[in-house]
Every structure is written in structure tokens, then in C-alpha cells.
Image 1 (spheres, rainbow, N blue to C red):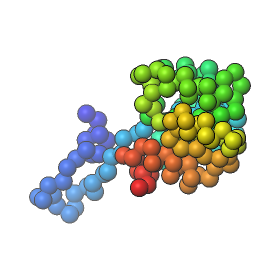
Image 2: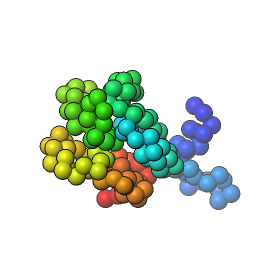
Image 3: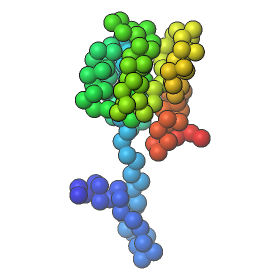
Amino acid sequence: MSQLHQQATRVRTPDDSLEAEPAVIAYPQRSILIVDDDPCILGLLRLHLQNAGYRVDIAEDAVVGGRLLLKHPPDLMIVDINMPYMDGLEFVQAVKSEQKLAHIPVIFLTINTEAKQRAMALGAAAFLTKPVRADQLLAAVGRQLPDSRFAIG
């Protein structure tokens, strides 16, 4: 066990002196896959989520997203609806048809507000409209990953 892991999981006892090392609260690093064809959006979302402590994988389309998804299934996906090759709704429908992946919550992020009903019918956990603010993004992610630091009731 690494020294960092030992510190993070250390349990204080009543005999611990006040001069002992402060307790470290360990938060498991959760993983998020972002699938969006806009490099600026990918970069911005990645920055916000990594700064919040999440492990982030990015894909510029559903083809790359599918490969990453099968290689490293994430705890959560953030998917744009309007993309080349396969749109986000088709991508999520394909993901949800796979039993081992169907449990992964999906947050749709798009400028296409007309697709909200279709997204919700696919079981979307949330629907965010571009441009999204960092606080909105982190609140939506925190609601889907309730054991994270940013969980909001």
C-alpha cells in the first residue's frame, strides 16, 4: 500500500495527539468520458472536470468514443447530440443496448434543445444546453456521481 493511500485511509483514534498529521479525506477518482466534436468544448470541459478531480477521457466523435468506452468504461458520459458519423442520440442508444454498459449515466450537452425529449426517452440523466457554465456542469456531474466531492442533494 502506498504511503499516500495509507494516509488517505488512516483512521484516527481517541489516543491520537493533536500534533499528529491532519486527517486526509480520500475521494475516489471517478472517470468521465466526454464525446463532442468541438475541440474547444472538449478542452473546456476537460479542464473544469480535471480541476475538480475527475479522470477525463475525450473523444471527438462516436467512433472514438465507442473504442474508449469499451477499453475503459467510465462512471459517467457527457455526450453532444450533433456530431458527424453517428449523432449522440444514436451513440447512446447503441451504448444502452449493451447490458454491461447500460448502467452508465449520460449527460447530454448540446445547443439542440429540440432533442431534449428524445434524449430523456433514452434515459438521459441530465440535459445541459451549450454554453454551459462550470458550476452547472459540476452540479450535474455531482448529482450523477453522488460519492464525489461535488454531490449536490
